[in-house]
Image (cartoon, rainbow, N blue to C red; front, top):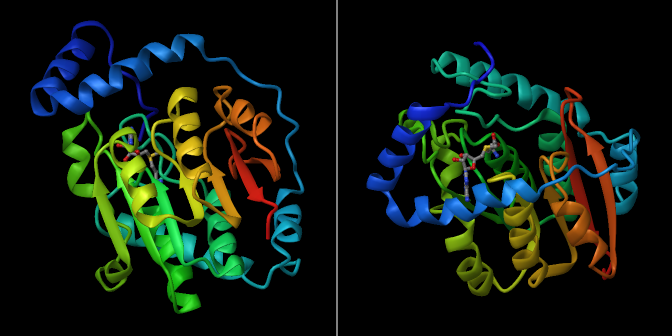
Length: 270
Ligand SMILES: C[S@@+](CC[C@H](N)C(=O)[O-])C[C@H]1O[C@@H](n2cnc3c(N)ncnc32)[C@H](O)[C@@H]1O
């Protein structure tokens, strides 16, 4: 599949008009996000190439991790299953978005396993690769639930039937899929849950939205909670939020294909 080319000019306007007609509230909520991109800038992060070992140290888990080979097997099965279902898998295959990065998926799985997380929240589902990794880890731990907030792609309705395709039926018992933008859904979910052990941001990667989500989850993050924030390389959101927070340790980690970065925040209050 060729690299995704964003629509321009009349095509872009047509897509926007269609999205506005289909869901005026979510489309209007998206406008300030798009405008805010004009004020985004890149941050010169100190990227940690030994992030995986350092993450395990922060989690108090053994390194080398005995779970690493299982994560690789899971990655291969997810890819195989999606391809068997006639679906794409990888970067830039979801209308400008990408399926999860393998390093992020592995990090999420280890955090959920080693922290024995009970309350996990994610934003941005797409085909559900991270959802699958979380649900596999919860199943292995024998406890816990995942809440996933996802706005199906506003400008590519043809992708909607692919939402969560990587999650098998048997794992859906411990999965609550909440449709809508994080701007609309996350505050109420945070209030309802009262405590979040692990949070994964992989929705709309603007600085504005990333900080909003981190701020909302920061209010209810468990004393030993962990946040994993994808795609931090294109904007300042992660840097600004972490700079203003106390009692945390952070890591900036390279994606498996070297194209992007994800950030980890571990609360130090355990
Ligand atoms: C990068 S993809 C997520 C990839 C996914 N985490 C995975 O495991 O493969 C981003 C997803 O977030 C959704 N999305 C976009 N804006 C959103 C918003 N404001 N709130 C929640 N989800 C959003 C997109 O439609 C898409 O499904």
